[in-house]
Image (cartoon, rainbow, N blue to C red; front, side, top):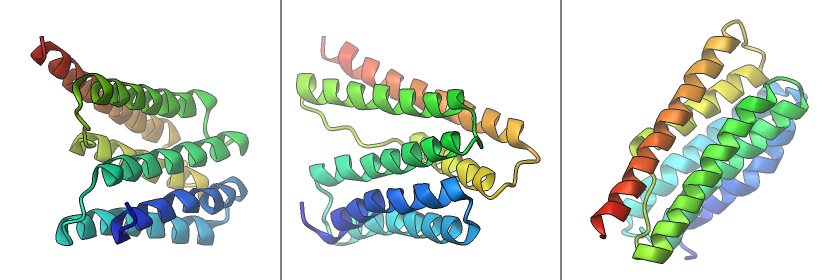
Length: 172
């Protein structure tokens, strides 16, 4: 549990607070610095986990959880700042809660701990980019960015739901 990869994931989770504050206040320097640092730790924790053979069940949970905490906290900060609509943040939260509940169900009922899928990672990356761009007031294409990010979230949720259903059907 206490390996370098997992510690980087926990650091990313802790970074969500100062990043949310920077997003709320529109502090471009800190938004960019913290967002890039979070992205680097996300990449580095996965790289080190594989390179050092430190892939753990705890890491499979804490890594995507750190991503979820960071995106939800950032989304809430931007809703409070009046930069993004509440419905968009609600879509982010609903998707993450449903995926979390589905993963908990599959783990408890079937003993399987599912890792994030690649499309889900892309969706979170796009959402994070959109949140950052809107926070630094690059919003000429706000409607298009929100549409693309929402579409990615919905598609990734449907892919997770498909995987959960395949597991349930396959076990009967």
